[in-house]
Image (tube, rainbow, N blue to C red):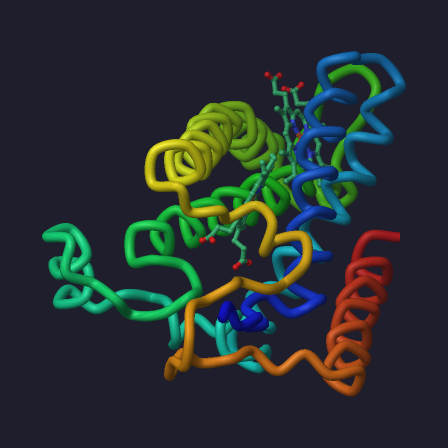
Length: 217
Ligand code: HEM
Ligand code: HEM
């Protein structure tokens, strides 16, 4: 009989789908142009708070959310590439690199956005504290880094569909319901996903949001 095992706690799932929404809407708004840049900035602030939340949750969250439980050692990465890895239900060693790369690229994008200037409608809220040369540099990083993010998202989606179609491993459903279905008795680690932990996640998220609000207002 199949057993349901909680892998992704609710905060990780909400984080994931909220981040994906912010990134997609943020890019749409900036491509629309004009005053929609204001909405681009709101999506960017939310993405920043989400990524900062995810970094903290990577230290204090449930088992499979913790970086220590999915960032691979060279040994586990090598075993994975040779097809001999059975390390658990969370991110696999290669997936872990793409997760970290995505988080870092989005962090750089959101932070540089705070100083970016489109020379017409909008200036990031922290641009007034730095020189014009710094604004120009950070704006060009912001422009260039979009392509790194596009490439990482394409890779992310390609990997998920590759697992879904060729390896018959369903990764999307657990990112919605939180659970994986595993055969028989097993010794896999379970993510604790209690209301207390969810409240703690909400408190961290709100505190980060308030911190950013006071920094940029
Ligand atoms: C477009 C923006 C997207 C971004 C920025 C993004 C980002 C991420 C990140 C950061 C993670 C790691 C989760 C964590 O541990 O915190 C992740 C995992 C995941 N994402 Fe996305 N994602 C996006 C879109 C999508 C879409 C559209 C799907 C579904 C079709 C999807 C399906 C998944 C799945 C299934 C995982 C778990 C992978 C695993 O089991 O290792 N993502 N994503
Ligand atoms: C992770 C979140 C973000 C993403 C994915 C993102 C993405 C982008 C993209 C794709 C562009 C278009 C670049 C181009 O080709 O011209 C852009 C431009 C811009 N973004 Fe963001 N951005 C983010 C966060 C922010 C934030 C937080 C702010 C400011 C509050 C911001 C302010 C700007 C400005 C002012 C421009 C126009 C720069 C120019 O004219 O070249 N962005 N952003």
